[in-house]
Length: 148
Image (cartoon, rainbow, N blue to C red; front, side):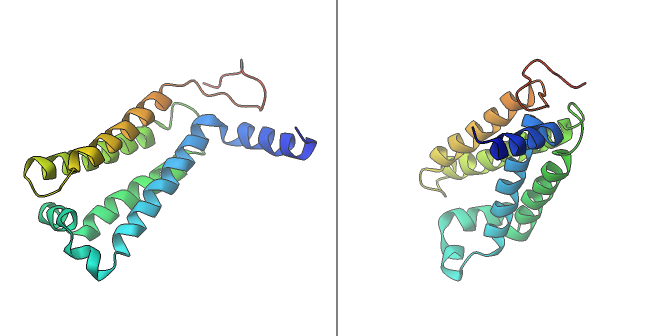
């Protein structure tokens, strides 16, 4: 590995760590999803999934939920390990909630193949759950160093 790349990686992992890096990813995902809900073109607002989601809550509310969870994940990425549980819990909750909405839409006959979307969102929730249990490793190549 190039020395510059190794130095950047070691700096990144010493400051943010692997759990923090995961939270930055989830924060980015959630914030972009929030933005995508607010930036829907008019024709997308006529789709069955949009109409079903709007019956539960206005799309602006959903975008707000996604955005708040994204911001929680961003901020928590810089917190010490094990003080980031709120962010992991919020990410699991929003992915699971969205999965439940799509599952309900499929069961109600309002969203075609909503179960497929639901399974994807539930898989994301499970992935976040698994990462939330990882011990934090900071300090670059040091795999044995854990912070408390």
